[in-house]
Image (tube, rainbow, N blue to C red):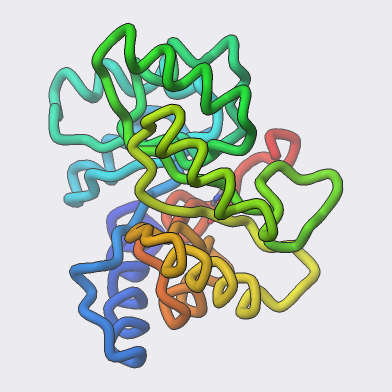
Length: 226
Ligand SMILES: *Cc1c(COP(=O)(O)O)cnc(C)c1O
């Protein structure tokens, strides 16, 4: 039983509690987003049975195939989109997700605002920040964050509640986490989504309010899906 979803989930919860205690933070302010991408509904159901309610998916189509049935039984699930969102999927994303963590360009902000106005559904929005300024990576550059947040909030009236980042794989994540938390503070945003299986204790130390953990809960994913 040591490698069941429930036992790994408990292990992650324990690590979160310890990391919070070490940082002098209240663990009630850190939400575990269980990243279930590539794993089937049975794995998600195991996590739900173990008390998990917040899940992250990186593809709209995959989430759409997996979650509506689970939601019908568990209406209190909270679903986060953590992968890139194309404008032609905005309608589905607004219908399905409670939080969209990857708002990363003006065209997308505009499309989200239009869909929210049309449907009245208003998923919370996080701005994805390219803290490492990597050319191939999505996200707003640090220097442009304040202006982009202002456009999203004041022009498009989006419910912007925070920032998210995925640090470069080959760098110490700590400085990226510190930068993201500082930008959130400066822009008056309460939510900071950062930290994955390999580094969520560090992210908590630097102020994460949401950690996105997949592998440590559900096990390894097939590598071709990344
Ligand atoms: C897959 C993914 C995660 C989870 O990664 P693990 O290393 O499996 O914990 C977190 N955030 C994003 C954006 C992801 O795509």
